[in-house]
Length: 335
Ligand code: SAM
Ligand code: SF4
Image 1 (cartoon, protein in one colour):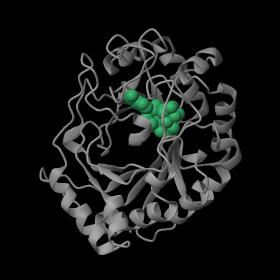
Image 2: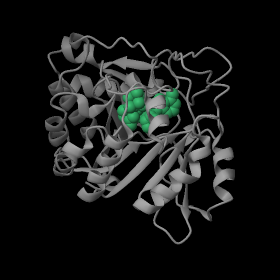
Image 3: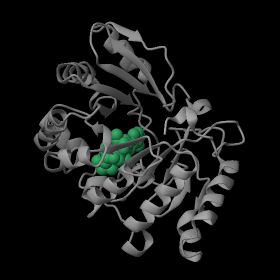
């Protein structure tokens, strides 16, 4: 059903309508990206995570509350056993307008077609560098060629749109922003640059020292490309530009330098069943307990989701100078 015909049911105390949910279906990953995880990670035991059936039930509840867009994420969503069947079920929910996914691309060669069949319309694929040795360094365990093959398979499959996500760190990959945009142009896909966020303790670098702002990236790109600002507003955090004469859009996600909270339309569901109301705050509701203690009473679950809107914070405050206040890593948050 088109969003314009839906009655918004999830409205927070600042008048923002929530119609978008990001669902993390696993906290595990085959990569260990330096900005996302520490080298040694402890993952959640099976009994603490939502079953696939529970995730589906919650997804259905959200759509019945006016949520039209669901993003499946993680961890790496495609390494959870049963992920494709779950996506297929969620993708066919009658009230859902759009199912999208964020992935590191490592499994895409084998399943791009199945994702399309599951109604996944758009993919965000993380790619921070085009150099194999740097890719290994930044992901610790990843193989650039495997990801590039996955990306190629996805492009051939014909999704509505594919976007690269690149987290840029000073003196690590800031020298590649032009190459990354050229690569997106050549592949006829979009790209967003993301400022690193201080989520969880990491041991590879000092986040303040590695900060490279969207303004710096934009200034680097302006020397090589004619970037035209896209004025129509999207509800997302990206500030978008189009490369003159091309389809490729270039986005900037700037949690530090350009706060985007006033238009926030989303909440997150962690794989532990926590409804997280803001990426940069800990306000949350334990939907797993509500589900398990009520024998899946969907009316009660929906009431809890509606009530949770009252505690959605106005905005996030990230401070790179201090130890992270938010101890959860992005991988368990669902980026
Ligand atoms: N594993 C998938 C992937 O990498 O695309 C999905 C989950 S990942 C947590 C989602 C996005 O969050 C990725 O684009 C990743 O680059 C980004 N990310 C992870 N940690 C981050 C951090 N500390 N700051 C900013 N972005 C981060
Ligand atoms: Fe895994 Fe994605 Fe985090 Fe990298 S950013 S460690 S691929 S969850």
